Length: 404
Ligand code: PMP
Image 1 (cartoon, rainbow, N blue to C red):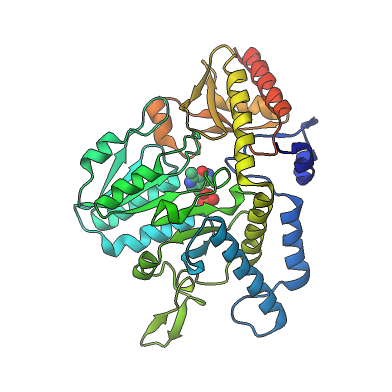
Image 2: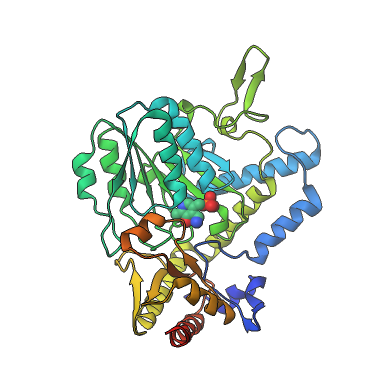
């Protein structure tokens, strides 16, 4: 069992009030809150050793470089990655996906196929559409069913040697579904396609073993796992990272530059042009240390408890429908009240101090599939409590009364 009362003391923001009520923060799928241990690391960096990395001989630069590279190793170990040079520091998941999409431009031809799932975040759709426009490749979609699960049969049947890339999120941000990525990766590899898994929503709940998954690329954002915004990582298998051209040109990513010719630095620096988010990277490592000290398995077990309780309590409310009620899911509940716009529910909940997200959650195709304008999404983290679930349920009941 988690000692949630103790854990909550680590998060200063959870003590604040909103509209005169104690904050209930249930927008964790959008961004998670930051524990004091990570805030301290950020303050310590700017107070004691703020310096540019990799190129300085002075002590501050060396301290900052050591801390930044230590964070890379922390990420490597957390995701069981074989080599630290396979961890590319990025500004977040979107950046990592765009790096790969841009890199594949020279590998694709008209008639090639890229598959994405029907439940992707826009950041996992648009870069592939842009790649298709550049190359003449075709975008294919793995469909989903009404319980919010992928339907893999058409994908299995139509995979072919034309398939070059397969793209799927590990967990859907809009529905919370945990996708069967092991099967998708295996099927794609059988036809020689590369697979990129978007782990943005999985990282807070699941410690993915990237060697066991045998995935080609995996992306994460630090701000979903108690780290700061504007930093993340792209994992890529060495063979792919060596083949892909650099995404951006600039300092740090070169071996030698002359006006006649530039040669690129080795991995990971080839993909890390310019001054990175040094403090953010160090804090990203600290966030993983924080989560590991609690234990990812314990976090997942407790979040499942929150999910089950919230699901059964919310379903008692008349006219409430949950989208994506499949069995294999994380602590995300997307719902609507019959005949009531999600935005109105979210606005009233905010007045009660309860932070949820409303809208299409950057996943418009899912909303089109259900023929709805959006949903109210409550997403739980390990620092939420059962009594916060009660506040949500009471709030939704009140909103339903006021709006119907
Ligand atoms: N993919 C998924 C599944 C997400 O939930 C998000 C963030 N909502 C992203 C990608 C994009 O992440 P970021 O904005 O940190 O780049």
